[in-house]
Image (cartoon, rainbow, N blue to C red):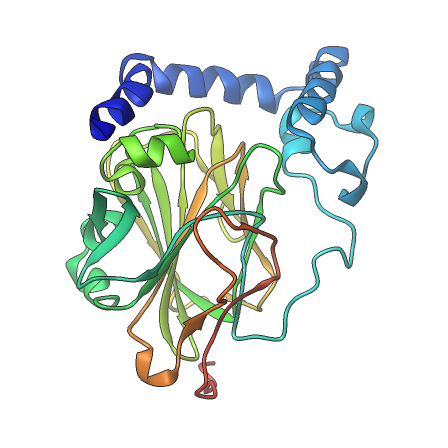
Length: 294
């Protein structure tokens, strides 16, 4: 019965033209519409209780477009970095986190998906994270929407995976099987001092586009086939806390780590499903010292 009710809760999402709505929203959000833009931002701030005093620019009327407002930078110092191995890459709320069971990532009660599906079908890449660890963090409309590095890393690959555009809120996560492995996403693969790490940006309904600091806007246009870029020879190294990308409207990030049990990998014990988090907060620790990777 619970499964049926969860399906009913998300049924409208199977019926509405999600891509068309997303393209319309993206077009509006990217343009300067003068007073209309300002009024929409004012409504949004009030509706979602956005913390504008934290923004580097708190003057709502000064934003030329909704995207400029949505990807606003924060004041220096409002997100200090914890002195731990891995910090939260975003503001948001924990969706789920924990060990990867063989190759299965827990999404919600009754729903899991494979690492191979998440990364776009690359079995060799997925095998690196067999019996490893994952963390899924949901960014709500009120949150800061730039994405930062949880640790130092060297960029190796970026994979764009086309897909659906379901909402990624908790209700949808409970009702749509394999949600994060069926939505459009950008998979970023890093080399770190403890091994590989994947940071995946998952798109959603109304998410007009996703961008990275090294490639700019990835979508639109929305490609129909999986597309990959390689960076092994470019020495793109980002430090812990550096911005690595952003969402133009809200979504979710999924992080993957290899099996690090022998190194004493442990999540912050205060992190549980639905826990609100901020960029820079302690996410996880390793007891074994890191080695230099560049």
